[in-house]
Image (cartoon, rainbow, N blue to C red; front, side):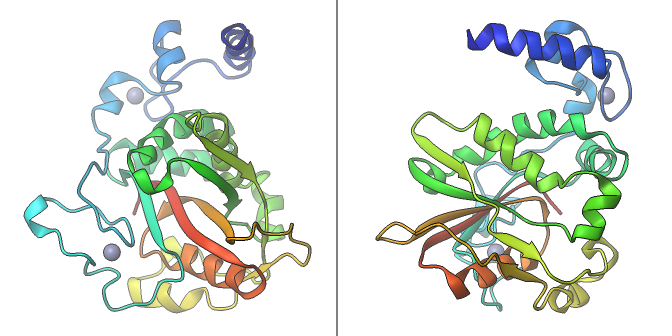
Length: 253
Ligand SMILES: [Zn+2]
Ligand SMILES: [Zn+2]
């Protein structure tokens, strides 16, 4: 039944969005489109998964195993309010362009491709099993109106749809963005670290947390320094009994 539903969905999606590569516009065969939606093989070749070697705190990828300290240069001198972050792919190759088209080019259907790319994060055992409340990084209402959708929410829905059987994910949009800010992408590292103070707040009504605290999984499109997800986590910690806060992203900036 599930297979049939996905084929019908596929047919409808194919009608709404011709199956072409989201990065280079090459038309895709049906078989390819079913396996890796909206991505041709040569663009896929440019994508680099973070793989097995990454900082166990902020998720920054390492070039080689020999450079594996417990904390890395990105997060070693900072207190992050998350327990850990895991990203799927490096922000190089076709990844950056695809994400740009998704967010700013109204190509909302690319969320399906990013959903497939997000499968990579389940390599991290700390994420597998048990139940998580999935919290998308919110947009400011004004930006949400401009864009028409919140990319992190789309990614959260895809993550939930494709989660491994032993892991229970439930969407809990517990955060709101109370201040509009300069886009992080336009700032240098130092500016990024201060741009987001007091930007996020927890919603007043939150469901009762389990006895051992809520397990929160923040979802963002790109994690760069980790400041955004850390500020989100800090806002959640103010009003909620927390068991653990992790963050995932499609790309590592
Ligand atoms: Zn392509
Ligand atoms: Zn780190």
